[in-house]
Image (cartoon, rainbow, N blue to C red):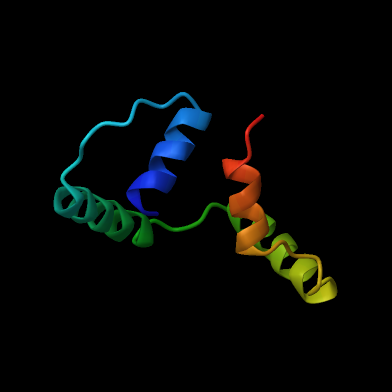
Length: 77
């Protein structure tokens, strides 16, 4: 998201907009993602993913576009 969109989301959810070092955030995110990727799923997580995949296969048209989701997020309450 670009700066204006981030500001809108922050305002919508009452999150303070603070300056960040994007490179450092990316480094931290990559580190977290690497840790998570090495963690095995629990049985309940695996079941839930299987349920979601089955639902997607049976209802492929039951989706919401990114544009609609973004509009919902950015719409004023």
